[in-house]
Image (cartoon, rainbow, N blue to C red; front, side, top):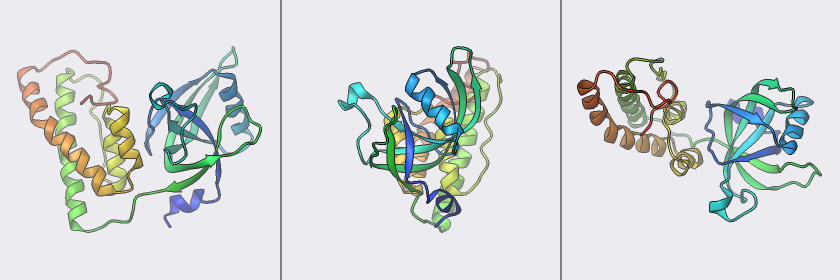
Length: 232
């Protein structure tokens, strides 16, 4: 059992915040909390641990009133909280560890509370995985450099440290504006190599085109995401 799983193994029930987005481990997410039930959730978190779960939920597409059992999500930690005069608040949260929703707990709260089980990737190691991670890291640096040049060198060039393969896969996936379907696949899979292979596919498809565009157009208007994310 990893240190991260050991840290959270005693947490069985988690307040849930269903949203039409996917949060990955190590990803920062600012949120505006305005609904009364989630205002209450934030207030309740103040008296305990600052953790809640973010689960992808798109009601119009799912046809359900809440995320179904078996859905993967990510535990979020409240890093900053700024109350507003009207009772709402702005918070900064960060993804920590993934979970699967087993069922719901009826605790009489206005928000959902889930019975959850935390998970990480299956243990993988070896030169093949390390080589794949190095290739993905190098491709990402090329794409990031080209995107930086296309933006007119505005903002800050993304800096992704070449860390262990699992963390690297999440850091690079976070840097892209992936659609919810693909980003959820990145969240749900418990295979580091599968995630890195998908990122490798995306990067190979993108890098030559972006580098060629950067050569032709040295300065281009930013789309508003360049400083944080790379659109694919």
